[in-house]
Every structure is written in C-alpha cells, then in structure tokens.
Image (tube, rainbow, N blue to C red):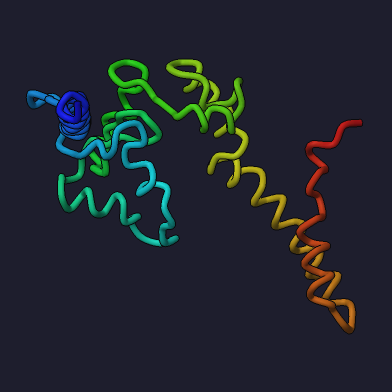
Length: 188
C-alpha cells in the first residue's frame, strides 16, 4: 500500500522539478538574451520590489548586469520580460516603438494610471498624448513660460522683502510658493 502511494508522489515531485527547471531556463535558440526566470508565477518579483537605495543602480539590476550583461531576461509580476541597460539598444527601441517594439506595462501600473491614462495607449496615440503632455510640462515650455513667470514672482517678493524691516522666512516661502499656483488653471 505504501509503495502505491509513493509512486504518485514521486511522479509529482519529478514533474514539479522539471516544470520549475523549464520555467527558470526556457529554450531560446539564441533569440532571447541570457537570464533567469526565478520561481514559477512570481518570478523575480520579490527581489525586484525589495527595498532599494535611492542613488545608483538598483542591486537587482546591478547583479543581473554583472552576471548576464547589459541585456537580460527575467520574470516580474508573472510576465516574462527582457530588460536593457544598454544606452544604444534603448535608443533604438524608443525609435522603433510602435513599429518593431510595443510598449508594455503591468496590469497594476495600468490600474494606477487609469483606463484612459497615457500608459494605456500604444503606438501613434501614445506618441500623440506624450507630445501633448510634453508641450505643457516639457523643458521647452518650462523655459518659455514658467521660468519667466517664476522670475516675475520672485522679483516682486524680493522687492517687498527689501522694503520691510523683518521677514519671517516660513511665511515668506509659503507665500511665494502658493502665489500664482492656480492663476493659469482657474475656472471663471
């Protein structure tokens, strides 16, 4: 009786071991870069989302760059992905977005950004929306509109402070930072 029970358990253990091996080391025939897929289903999500220092390359990326090179494959939040830290490759990918490459975001990122958010769009509609956003908050707009506006506000407050005998820094910075904040976006 014990031998009959042992046989299915052994088959199950062998099957799970083979499945985990295939998951961690999928065949790529030179098409996919080297890398590890981590554990089945969760992949390397735990390492990817673990605490990281604020500066420098995150340890998750640095370890894989040292082991596999600047381009490697992994599995994060149940999705198989290829990560690139190579500047030339990334530039090429962004140039070919919508043609050869498709931008992809996790379901959780899409839920955070919203169903009609920038991340939910692909191809030409994504480029159009991205350019629209950059026209409002991009570096050219910042130079053209906002820096001039900030200069006027700062000069006004500096002249007011120069005329007074005493300046409370806390109140003064609150006044400067809140002045004109909603002028452009106010509804009549």
